[in-house]
Length: 173
Image (cartoon, rainbow, N blue to C red):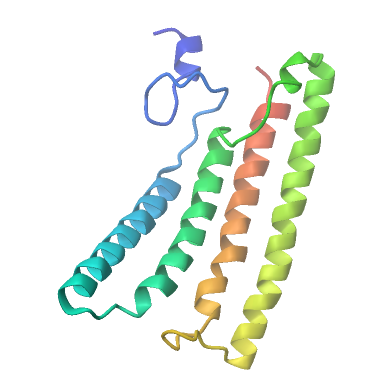
């Protein structure tokens, strides 16, 4: 296999055709898989118990919503790291190389700005929930335990976006 073919191989070792750099994403893969597995298990358990006893587990909805948000953010981090996030390239592919580079820079700045805002406002919300001792209506858990993941995972996403931006825009070759 030539060097060019090696650079086109994705994280899973198969030819994806995507323009991405090989980066270790095992943490995101493991966290996303764990979240999905827990969602499946608690949802299946809830369905079985509900049909068998006519009683529902109270915690499943609260945990499922949290895990879906968690899984979305870990998936976004993985997608940005491997440059496989959703985008429309119809116009971008038709631009000259300099304009394409500029579009990548604008995308980088806008993405970092958006996730920085999530860090700022998510951090403020988390602090307020901790300060005022808010609890979830279903289980009475401290709500900040759920919302603290927004700023934390946004930091991970920004690091992945900046790393990907560096690899795509500023690394020679």
